[in-house]
Image (cartoon, rainbow, N blue to C red):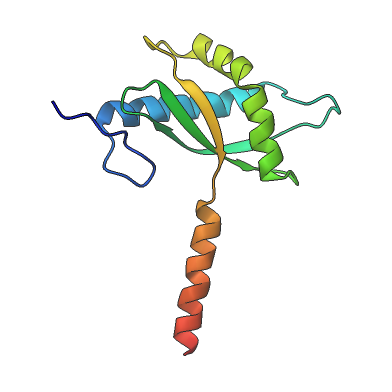
Length: 128
């Protein structure tokens, strides 16, 4: 029996179940981040936009891609969200009814930076 591959961010097509659960988690985490006031000891408020959620094939791990909305360092934001992932996961458990609530992993979304680099390359090619 062949082992099932974990479908990554740029890997094969995700299943319909993965897509549905990812979208459900995305909407609810965005709602949780808006409704709750998450702040650190310095009373610094962190606001973020959830751009994408990818679930593993067994739906046990959800990778949440976030972008900072204010003048916040993206690394600080992901570290802060990673530190508070249990509180976010607890609030998520109250909102959704899944057999297993996935473990949350927060990552910085670099898609816009990649698009900007690609656009620069295209502009440079057009000038030549």
